Image 1 (cartoon, rainbow, N blue to C red):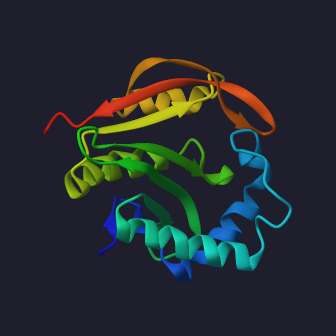
Image 2 (image 1 turned 180 degrees about the vertical axis):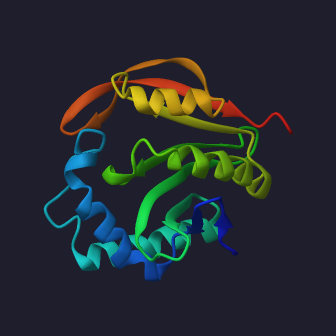
Amino acid sequence: MQPISTERTLITLVRTDDAEDLRTYYLRNTEHLARWEPLRLEDYHSVDAWKDRARDFAGEALRGFAYRYVVRFKGSREIIAVANFTNVVRGAFLACHLGYSIDSEMQGKNIMFEVLDTLIPHVFNTYGLHRVMANYIPENARSGALLARLGFEVEGRARDYLKINGEWRDHVLTARINDAR
């Protein structure tokens, strides 16, 4: 599949040869992402674990189970963000969950909006989905504002929804519908 281009970035589905770059991205942002992610096992960031993970991510896309993307500035090899469309359900639901993160140094530069504003219509059109759901911890105001700006609507709140950084956390539930379908 061809890279997806925005004004500043190139976005590609994760490939097996992205393993080292993904590892570097997550190691560089471990502290930045810790309060928004589950606790990780000690060997989570080993080279072999990332090779296995990248291979599995690429396979998920081939089977239509998930579509995980890496984001780079044009002309650069360094990953600056990731966007994952996971838990794809076909049939009458035609939906998935969106998760994303951005490098700590790239926050506040409108990059994630630029990426998701391009990727979400692509996912709707390419994979025939009707609904993308994205959930966030209530105090993550940046995520809430980004999702609202992207056209996601709040659908509710889930108590103790995910175990994040070792604690069960409530989440605000949002979704964006593919109005073109």
